[in-house]
Image (tube, rainbow, N blue to C red; front, top):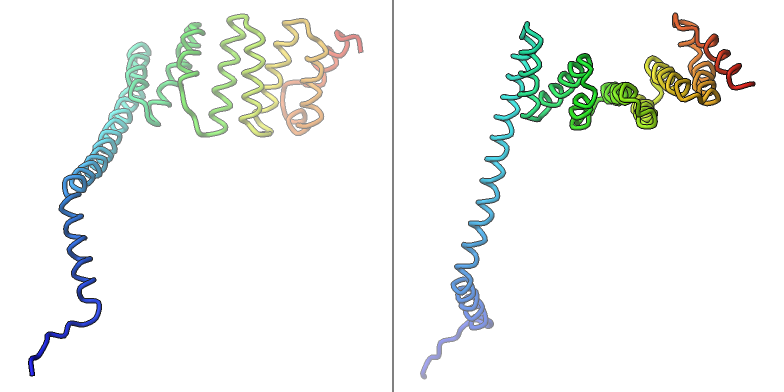
Length: 219
């Protein structure tokens, strides 16, 4: 009796599936290789960017360190300017250092350029930056922008009882320069009502100036 090969059921289907997979892989080999190359390029690019970023951050740190150590003010200013160009955390600090020095030199527009380019995360520092922007605008006689900057400083300070009253006093001074005694009075009254501890402890007599503004406003 002749024997016939008996193949397990489904074997033909499995062989055919494997053949199809191999054929598909061969057909797509170039595309798969291209995708792998692209992925590797992206990963390599990310690694290079990270290395460059760390290198630049180190350069910024070093540049700021040199500026901090400089004895001559003009040399320090130039070193801070160089560090500011490198960016990163130290670069941002350098921008503030440059802005402060330019403000002291009465170069208010130059100071604003560096202040507006700085990126600050710390809330108190950010509030100080906005306050200095306001001071620059006051000296440039742009009172509306000064008031806006002081409002941003107050917003950044988030109710800090030590510095918010200082910003309100600056606003009051601007309002007085504008002849807006009603707004001046309200600024001082905000300090008295919302920051009584400042009024009690400060050498600045808030109540005295509030009453002066009240009288000028005809209240």
